Image (cartoon, rainbow, N blue to C red; front, side, top):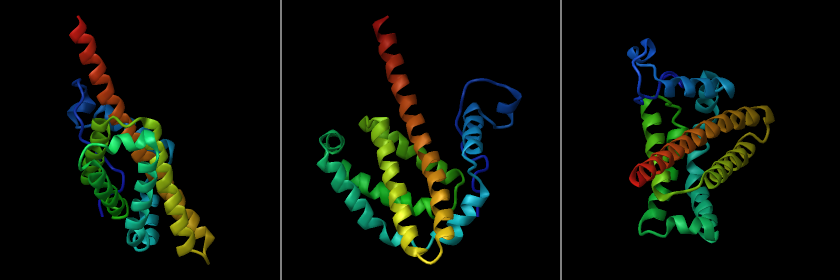
Length: 195
């Protein structure tokens, strides 16, 4: 297994400090600091690998369909899926997200996949509040499934949910950071165009 949260992002940032020469970027330091803040590390990966891997993915399709039913009922979120093919791509992407999440391989491939997802969010212009709402639904789903799978072991269910919450917050952070980066680039381009 790839170390759960070792140096997994390879983003380029400006600057030529000694840390950059070693391949450590400001983005990497920010990600590491965020993971430290929420205490997201190897233990969470082991808990998810050991406890959650087998029971979450089988129920994912039903959950994703339910989530999309909700998103399509709400006028503000329905608009994000108006373009042909967006809703189907989003469903496939969310199913893949759960497969990756519970693969317990959180190295470079996971990071690149998360970047691609975040970029997709930014392209359709989804607002951060809606992203947080979706990640909250992910946590609700995980808690429901963990409760059923560990009905005789509440401590085991709690460990799985705690690990899942930390991963969901990490991924929501990544998605919103990418969205903000894209929005800032667009704003900067508009300001430059006005000069």
